[in-house]
Image 1 (tube, helix red, strand yellow):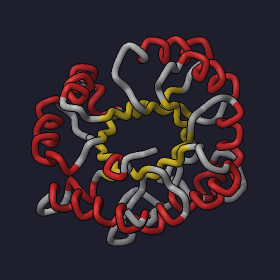
Image 2 (image 1 turned 90 degrees about the horizontal axis):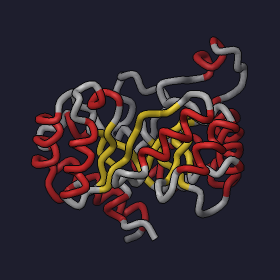
Image 3 (image 1 turned 135 degrees about the horizontal axis):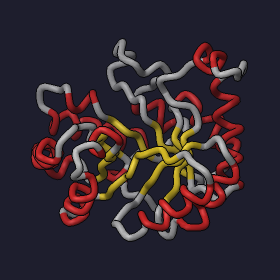
Image 4 (image 1 turned 30 degrees about the vertical axis):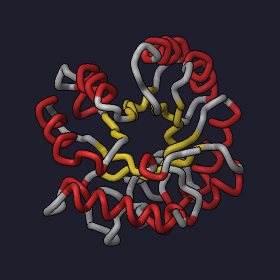
Length: 233
């Protein structure tokens, strides 16, 4: 059972450990689950921040979107199991890579990235994939499940189709959440909080709507309230 307040994941997209710590202090009890990605990796303090989050009883989502030959990714996942990690991402475009990673993931929940929320059909077409994003997302999700992944990253726009295709128990984690509607940024396939959970999302990842709020902790608490209402909790 997923705790209601763990369904909100804050994107800790900052370049330094000092800024990461400041955000955790600022948000306090409003957020209990943090995503740390590539921007923090270049600080040199990535794993120090990871361990500090865990020491503060925060759950950690390592969002580094691994993509390499199967043996390399498998070895990377095996190494990552030494750390207190709840979620980790891998690109969902190669069955052998996902399968190899799944065999070494230990207790980490491995999430396959289907189609980035910054992409739409025209972007896929440029990659030689002339199909709707929803079709590609479902196809890649089914391949990820067959390879042993625990869930996927996808837009909330595809969550209903994913839930129908994969059934219960397969994690659906949705970035690109825009509580006030489209924000004119680099995210193209966005939804609001009630839409994501009504469609079957298990978690949402939110960054800018919290970071750019006048009162970030209050904004996070407002999202927590929306999630609880959407789930009838």
